[in-house]
Image 1: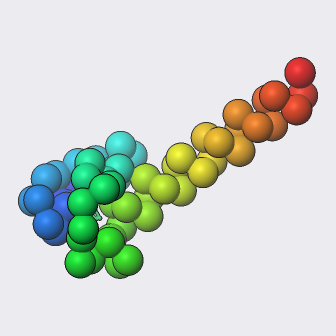
Image 2 (image 1 turned 45 degrees about the vertical axis):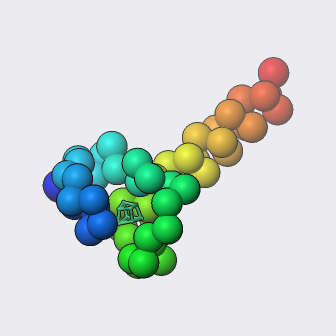
Image 3 (image 1 turned 180 degrees about the vertical axis):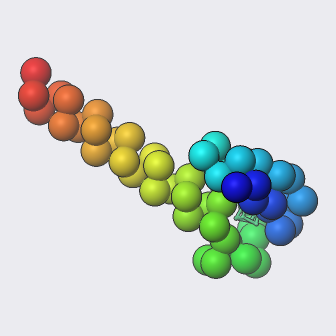
Length: 56
Ligand code: SF4
């Protein structure tokens, strides 16, 4: 699925979705699917990393 950044009109695949302007003010950030997916992916990666460290 292709998602489009409402503010900067950038298109990206949902699998690679990530806000490319995380430090800029964005009026639609709270409801932005790209921002949400990107944060979820980062959170999952951090959890996997933490688990891997614990299993060592
Ligand atoms: S949160 Fe990021 S990706 Fe979403 S609309 Fe704003 S600038 Fe674009």
